[in-house]
Image (cartoon, rainbow, N blue to C red; front, side, top):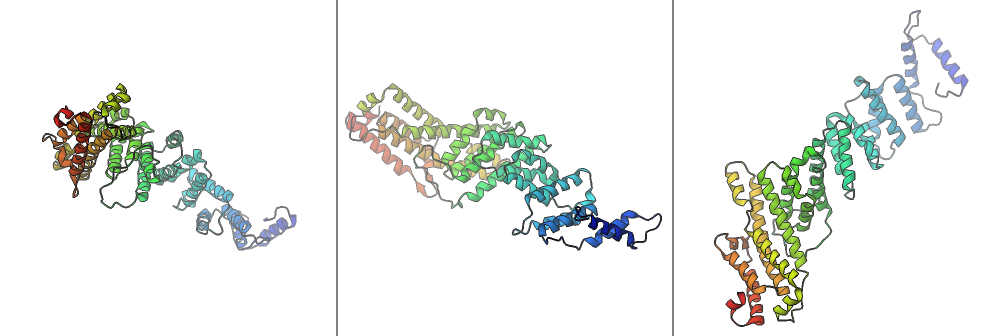
Length: 448
């Protein structure tokens, strides 16, 4: 029987079956029982080659014939624990499809509750980059399908283009998986991956006085950006984009990851703000857009530098041209707008008192004000000094704004025991001295 090419073996098996008396064979005997009994006796026999793989295949065939699937599949699952002697991929593929077949014909009594075999085959598909059919096999995992497919999505390489990410997510919809739940879980898993990669939070104030530009992002920052991408592909999750992006941008800025926040903000178009039903989230989103746009423009403006040996700032202004003058004025106007706009701290505190806001969000918004308002003032003044464009007038307008009791911006210069007012006022003094050197000894005339 086990060597179908040898006629004598088959004849010997036939003679054995005919001569056997257990169980009793009568005129109306159950021939299936006889066959099962004889096959049971063969279960302890080994193949002639003593090859473990061939022996496992023989026992597998025997288990299928005898309908002892539960024991067979349990044995298959046990082989996954032996990393030194793994099953061939072809065998795993066979047992996965056998498991699927039994599932589809509702032969649940032949199956164990475990889905380890199909999960193992899904892992093989992922490793071989056969991504198009992963959703198909994952859909058979029942309640675990959402988590499993989301884990597959979150594990896709960071270099994967968005078009392929979109197609992979929509494959879930094609096989009747809830695409909203899949996208939300994939987003969560991406954030979890980022959290594990970021260094521990020391509580120290981040140093924002770093050179701007298109610096490469860390792997952790890329995972944060990927977490928002999963929510932007399908209409069912559009309402989550603005709240989640606000939360991530706020966290990134509070911890000094400005370039990652700029990239994340750029990946969320302003049109997405119209899809948010919460006006508070929309206002916060627009704040970050203006803040990060200003930050990028400051980085570009800082590259316009002239040698300090040239003392006449009017000559530099003439060399710069009207376009540069307009750029400086717009940069100043944008700085004033961002510094004086509603950062959401007051409304957030009122909501928190009423039990409708998150206290952590309030603290993060306060932290942002105290980090960025001083930095914008100092950075803009220093950039003006490097170019000597409109130095006296604009510097004085900005310092008056900081000192004004209406907006109380001077209070934001003191945070966590650090007072940046002396640093800022020293820059203001240097700017006025520079103006006086170029235009006379009257500081009031210089500032007019």
